[in-house]
Length: 537
Image 1 (spheres, rainbow, N blue to C red):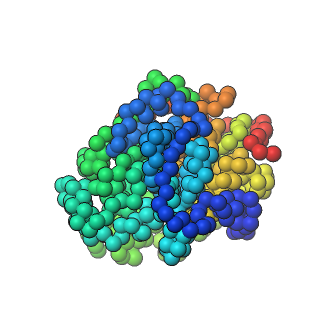
Image 2: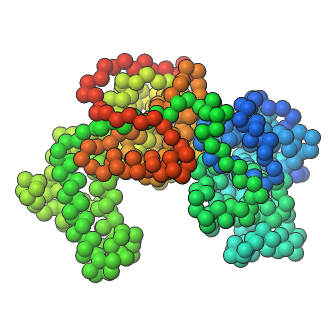
Image 3: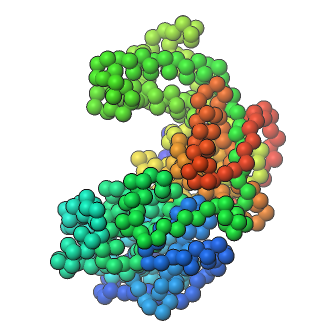
C-alpha cells in the first residue's frame, strides 16, 4: 500500500523518528561506577485522591483498578520522591513496550528532574550494554526482557523451580544468598503489571526483586483479581493490594462523566447475506473437523491440522468482515477455500467470493464510512479510533491522511507491520502534532497516549480488559471537558450489539466501571462542522 509506505517514511525521516526522539535517552558514555538518585522535588502536584493512595503505599504494594488517564505514573513518581528524597536509591522502572519506555524516561527527566534517567532496551546490543556499563545508572527505564536477559537468565532453572514452590520468594532468597547474588536495584516500579503473572520475564523479575529485599510498587488498571489463581500469585509478591474504585467520590471528582453512544451503522444487505453464509460454511467445516479429529478440535483452537486452521480462519473472517468492514478482509488467504467459490442459492446463485467482490465495489467498508462521518461531525482537539484489523487501520489512516494531511493523522499498529521504533514515533506524532490517532489493540494498553476528547470504537472490545483500557484513553479531565465520550459502531442484524452489551455487563460486574448508555441510528447526513485544532502550529 503506497500510502502506508509513505507514512513510514514520514515517521523514519522526520522530527518524530525514534533516533531523533531518543537521541539523549540512552547512555552514550560509559558509566564506570554505580549511581544512585535522589528526587528532591516534583514538577507537579497530586490530586487529593492520589495523595490518599500514596499514603497507603508501603514497600510491596500493587495499586489496582485505576484506569489509564488517572495518574498512576504521577503516583509512582511521588512514591520515588518520598523514598529517595533523603536516602538516594537505585531505581528500575519496568515498562511492557518500547513506546511506553520512551515516554516514562521523558517523564522522569521532565517531571522528576532526573537528567540522568536512561532508557535501556534491546535496541542497544548486549555487548554495547556491557561496554557502556549501562546498568550502573541510578535510574533506568527498561523492558522486562532486557533486564531479565542481562541479570536473571543464568538463574532460569532456579527461577522455574521457585515458581513451582508455594513460597517462590523464600526459595529464591536462599538460592541467591548461596550464590552471592543481589537484585541490582533498590526500588522496582512495574507498570501495567497485570501482564507479568505466569511464565513471564516480568514475574521472574518481581519474585527475584522481592527475594533480594527490593521495594516494589506495581501499577495495573485490570489485574483480574476475580481469578483466585491469579490473585494467589500476586499475593506471593505483594503484601498490600490497594484497590481503587472509580466510584470513590474523590476519584469521580477528577474524572469527566462517562458516556457511550451505540450507533447502528447499517451495512449493504449483501454483507449480511455473506455474513450468514460464512456461518453456514463454518458450521459445515466444524462438523467435518469433529467427525475426523473429534469434538475438542471443533471448538476452534487446534492449529495442527489444515482443516482445523481453515475453521479458525473462517470464524475470524466472519467476525472481521462485520466488525472492521468488508475491505479489512480482502487480503485473507482463506478466500482460496473451495467452499467460498461454489454457487449458493441464497446469494442469487453466486459464490461467496463473487458476492464479496461485488460488495466491495458497491460499499468497500461501511465501518470506515461511519467513522469518517463521526469525525466530520464532532468537534475535538484529539480523537482516537480503535479497530482490531491492521489492514483496516491502515486503510482508514490513509483516507484521513489524504483528506487532512499526513501531519494531522497518526497510525499505530502492531510490530508485525511497524517496528517498535516506528510505533514510538507514531505515538510521538500524535502527542506533538496529529489530531487523530487510528490504532489497533496495541494502543489499548500501557501507552501514555495524550488525553483525547472523543473515541470511536469501530469494533466492540472482546473482553473487559480491552473495554477499560480503551475507555481510559479519554478519562483525563481537561479544560472544558465534562464528558468522556465513546462512539461504538454496531452493525444491525449481526452479533455485534450483543457482544458489546455482554462485555459491558462484565465490566460493570467485575470492575464496577459504569457509563451512561444511549443507542441510535447513525445519522444519514451530518454537516461538516469539524474545526481541526492542534496543540502545535
